[in-house]
Length: 464
Image 1 (cartoon, rainbow, N blue to C red):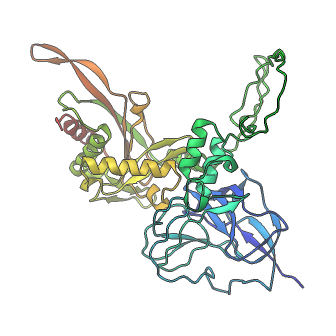
Image 2 (image 1 turned 180 degrees about the vertical axis):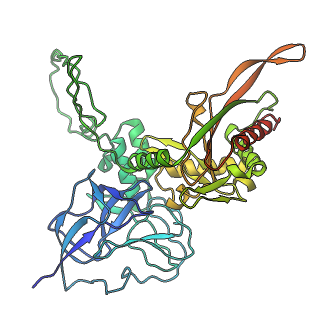
Image 3 (image 1 turned 120 degrees about the vertical axis):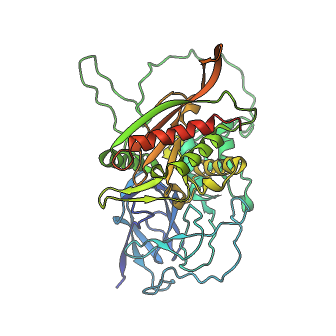
C-alpha cells in the first residue's frame, strides 16, 4: 500500500505568517526526488527556493503563481516512492557535504557567501534553522545542512531556461520572457543584469511576437494598412485589469488587489507601529552654507546622526513597551529606508560610528544593490538602532516618519533648498536641508529630542 505525505509551508524567516508562490518547478503527476527544487516563494525578505522533503509522485499542489499561502498550510501532497532516497527520521536534509570552500554561484560565477539560515524541509513543513556561526547570504536556496558547510544558490533549469529564483521573480515583475533573454551567466544561466537589460531594450517582452528577422521571409505585395479603429480607453485597476466605474454619486466597485510580499509585510509593520508608539516630531533646517565641494549628502546625514547619538544616547535606543525597559546602544546601526516598486525596505548600515565618508557611501551602495536584486540577507533588514529616511531626494520638505519598535527615533531629511538668511550687515542666500526627527515620547523627552536635533544641525553646519 502506497504511503502519502503532506508538506506544509515552512516558516521562511522571522515568524512571517505567509508567503507568495513565485513559480512551481514541477506539476501534479511529476516524480520528484528528495531535496530537488519544488517551488520558489516570495516573502517580505527574499525569494526563497523550497526543496522537496521526500521522493515520490506529486498528487496535489496548493495554489498557483501569485497565490498567498499561510505558514503551516499544506503546500503539496506526495505519494512516496520506496525505491527512491528518503530522509531518515530526525535527519535535517539528507545531503552529505564536506567542509569545502565556497562554491561559485552558477548565475554569476562569483563565490557564494556563507549561509546562516536554512530551509529545512520536513513532512511537517520545517522552518528556517540556525546553522551555527555563519554569515547570512540572504536568499535561502535549496535544502541546507545544519553544519558549517556552504551551499551555493543553484540556477534551476525550468522550461529550458536556467535562472535562480530571484532572477525569475524579477523577470515576472518586469514582464520579461526568460526564454527570449540572451543569457550571459555561467553554464548558460540568465543573470539579473540580463533580465534588466532585456526589460530596458524591450527585446523579450512577455507575449510579444518574434522579430521580423527571426521569421521566414516571404515576398508579399504591399497593401494599404487598414484604418485603425480607436477603442474607448478603459480605466485600469492597480492589478492591471479593466475596472468598471459608476456615474457620480454611485459608489464605484473596483477590483481589490491583495497585498503581497514586501507591501503585505509593510502594512503589518506600520499598523503595529501605529498601535504601539506615541510619536512626536520636531522640525528644523540645517544650514549647509559652509560646505566645501565634494560633500556626500547621505554620508553627512549618517555622520550627523552618529554624532547626535553619541551626545544624546537616549535617542539611540530600543524600548520594550510591555516590560517598560530601555536599552541604550554603544554602537550606531542606521536603518536606511530604501523605496522600491515592491514596497519599503530598511536595511541596516552596521557600525556606522566606525565608518568614514567613503565607508558609509560604499555600505549604502551595497545595501541598495542587494535590495534591488532581492539578495539582501534577512538579518540585514532588522536590528538597527535608529533609522534615516532621505525622502528629500524625491520631494518634500518636512515629514512625520514612522518609528518602528523597538527603535525610539527616526530622522527624515527633506529636499534641500536655498533661502535668504540674515547675516551681519545684510542677508545671504544659504543652502539648507530640512530635518524632521520623530521620537517615541514614551521613553524620550522633548528636551532629549531637541538636543539631538541641535547636535545634528551643528555637525551638518561644518565645512566637511
